[in-house]
Image (tube, rainbow, N blue to C red; front, side, top):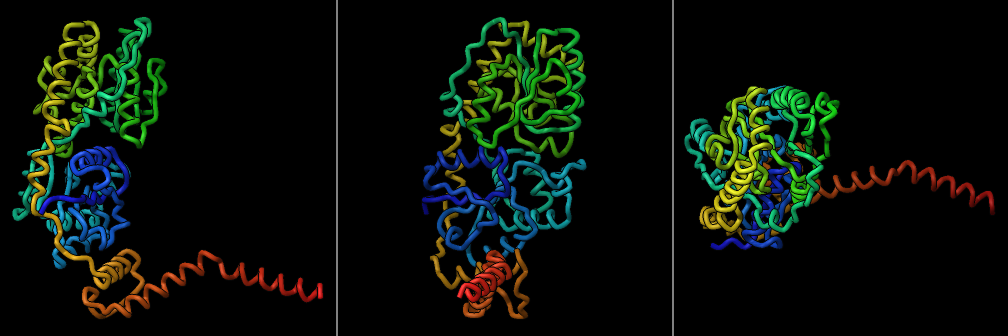
Length: 410
């Protein structure tokens, strides 16, 4: 069965979801690709199109994989990070380290027809954790057409070299960059550093650093990156199991934006960056980073070569046009053939409310609960919610005041 529509179920709004959403829109048409928050999940959407869940692991929806399987609705799961191995004490890390979140992640992965990932290391980890789970290693997308529609800036030579970083905050990586920027400030005061999105307090206090907030709109984010006219891009990444399973997002973006960049000599960059051809690979030592930045600034031939080769590789390997056939082939035959049925839709809504809001403690099986009791419970819940929003007590007092005033006037 051909793909007529795609439901892309997400939690939150991060760069990964925006990148994949744009790509899926190019694959089936923007009008047929529906990016939806997991909280809005409903039966009508589930049985009309191909369902892809992206990073979904909210414990309130741990029941979804089993429910879909029992009702004949297949789905694909997209995962680009090894959340089982995330470390640190950040809010994000603590969320994914929660036992309930891990259990929900396990359930979504185990219930999928297959997992889409881009890292061989992550695919190997998943198949070792779940031997029955199938992984599809598909090429990761980058919107080259979007980049080519952005006009490059024409900076005056007097502005001087600019070294940039675009991405989120990472404690260890930023501690490395703090040393690098401080050293460059002494050696090359003519070089300015710019950060889009993540930055540390120490970096923001340095005279040679300027910071720009990121954007939730991916096109605006890339446009800002191109508009700054960076001479060199920075992509530090520390060695860890979690980082080794990541995609080479920084390489795709810097290469796609024609920005020669310095990358940590770690996975995932080792597998895609060719040293002194499409980028510079260096050890995570401040001195090595300082030397590499100076080299890209001062060696004009190397600078132009890397800019050209990196863009050529990204366009040939990651552009939407280049990878759509591989993705489309993996999707064939997975569209749900379940007809929409109002009784089934009500039952799904009922089950969702039970798990998400826990408003009806029934002894009977939720999956076989009759429609009438479901409707009654839903009606009473909606009615109570309406009364709460209207603030009945306030309306009653207003009514009393109006009645008293009317009696007084009469």
